[in-house]
Length: 369
Image (tube, rainbow, N blue to C red; front, side, top):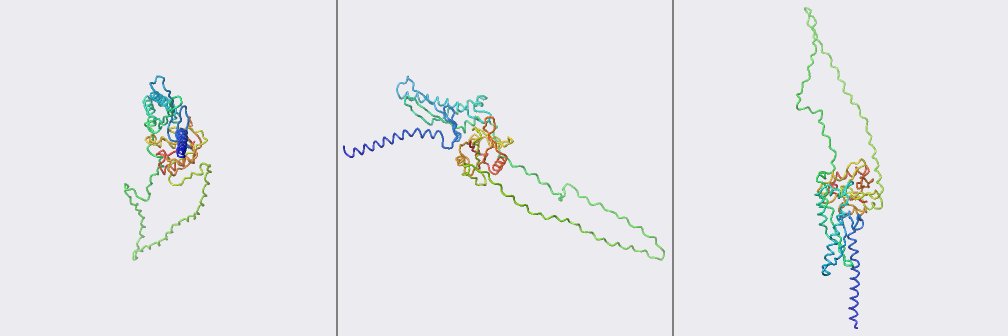
């Protein structure tokens, strides 16, 4: 055996080893892609999962080859078809349990309306396979995926949902007309004329000239006394309040000031549960964000809110762009604990930020839980 043959055999072994490693690693990469990146909010449900960060639902189905198949090719095709049907059935069960708000899930809407049920069934049947794996016994495992934004939300969200404007600013009072300006409709009246009584003339004596009355000396009119206003002393400028302490996760997320491009609400430790239409309320229960602010078109196309497990990952998400503000939630609210309540100061801060920008109207909200 020559040295050239040994070199060729060595190369073949290297190629075989690299190919085997690639085949072993391929399923791991696919699973990582389906499970989501680090920081994604993934909820495992039954035979699948819900990725609340990307807004996708996944389901898996397994199909076995029938014994009546004519050849291996037909057996494989029939197994793939059976796996796809099972995956769609599992996907429908997962979609039915998706929380819409604090009081309902998708199945509640499907039961109330046959139209919604038909539309949801159609959306599920349109799911696409994203993973296919052939098992050693000849069966096939298929994973399908569908988006929650778009057609599903369009079937669920009521037609009357959504506001038309961002949280309105308080109305300015109407200007009060000055009292010095006369009313154009009124006719000015002349001041009344005061007639002074004339003194009666003294009797005239013959041979004497009548006395001419001497004019009375004019009395000086005293100048009006203007009271002196006490001199106002400048009030001392209050010292700025100390900023709230930041957690280790929030220390790297700094709001740059100016107009906020989005909002990240930190609700970790509050027992929050993700939903399609979560609300943000103040301590009095007044709604700050969702149906009164978001238009139906934006809610359907973009989703009301995104979810994450990490504050830094949420702040760097494209949904809130490059200058998001971070607010800490006070507690969860609603029967299903899908809504989030803010402290009074944070609620006022969110109102002020949203009044200067329109990020709430365009659903640039991420909730960390």
